Length: 158
Image: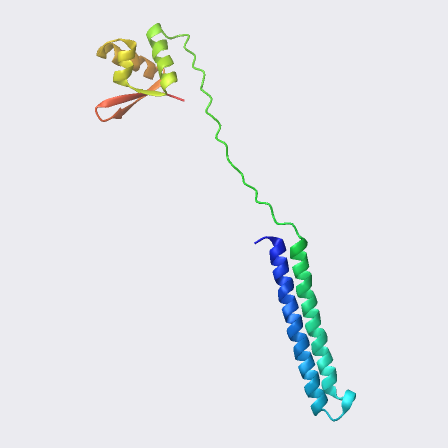
C-alpha cells in the first residue's frame, strides 16, 4: 500500500482506540461515582486519571506514527540492469598468412564458427588441402577444431 493509505489506516485505528478509551473512562467514572462514598478524595479517582492519561499518551503515539508514515515519502526502488558489452572483435594480425589462410580467417570472423565441410566448400579446396590449412592455422593458434560427432567445427580462438 502507499504510505498515505497506511498512515490514514493507523490514524483511523487511533481514533477507534480513543473512542474506546473515552467510553471506558466514562463508564468507569459513573461506576466510581455511584460506589465511592469518599467523593473526589477517593483513591479510585486518582487511578482513573492515571489510566486516562496513559491511554491518551498511547493514542498520541499512534497518531504520531500515523502522521509520520502518511507524510514520509515511499522508498524508491532502484533497478540495476547489467548491460552486456558486446565483445569487441579481436583484431587478428594476418600479415604472415597466405591468401587461403586469410580468406579462411575472414570467413570465420564473419560466421563466428563453421563446420569444416562448409569452410572447405566456401574456400573451394579439397579435403586434404583443408586439413593442411587448418593444421597450419591451429599451429599458429588462430583457430581451434572441436569434434562434433562425425564433423569438426572450426572456431576462432579469442
